[in-house]
Image (cartoon, rainbow, N blue to C red; front, side):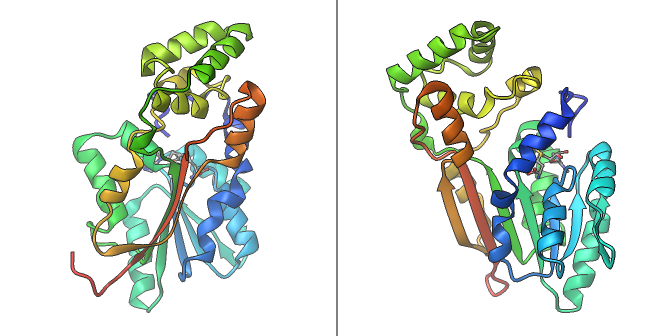
Length: 279
Ligand SMILES: C[S@@+](CC[C@H](N)C(=O)[O-])C[C@H]1O[C@@H](n2cnc3c(N)ncnc32)[C@H](O)[C@@H]1O
């Protein structure tokens, strides 16, 4: 985590919120025929611990650049005694494990849950390219499967928002403690919620009151859905794709504002490598 940029103030809330969507995050296990899984941006290892408990046959590696998160992962989600989860911030170590596994005929999968938007938000230029090369196998480690799950909105969401929805949000926030200020800070950063893309972005953010200063600055939607799909290298084919409205978010927005979110907010995608296809 880039805590030098934006410290996470209430770590426990953040971690608990992430844990709620565990089943949704591990959706890809059904679709990958691999017995080695690398979780890129594993944080406290909650998803890996969940997979270790339910699928003890898969060798698991957690990769993250936040040492504090890795320490927490080692304590909370060590894996099974006969198959401990390896946690590392060293990509060279990940590469060596994947290459050795594939040299013995095994297949390897990479999972990225709620991490692509962080990478694209915090990294620029060569740093961003380096990480994208790691993901897409341009640095010598080629994954047989890649699973993504992240917030992602279609370019078709860029349109005027429904005026009733905008009015409702202003009403509800007007009655909340600090609500008016929070909404106005948010609009200064991201533009008026009368633009539908901004309104969706706001819905993805507004619940994180304790970490508000951090969330306010975080761009949850750095890449439109269409651009992301177009960036997938030729040799990967989608074997599962679901662009959907996160049920938990739908309920929260309905409960808080009486608005039924109509736009898809999240993407789940599993890609399979076709080794017979040339780049
Ligand atoms: C929003 S959290 C998601 C955690 C977990 N995958 C989940 O879905 O609950 C993003 C994680 O990715 C890690 N991360 C962000 N950028 C990274 C990078 N360039 N390299 C490694 N880890 C990164 C962060 O430290 C953080 O733990």
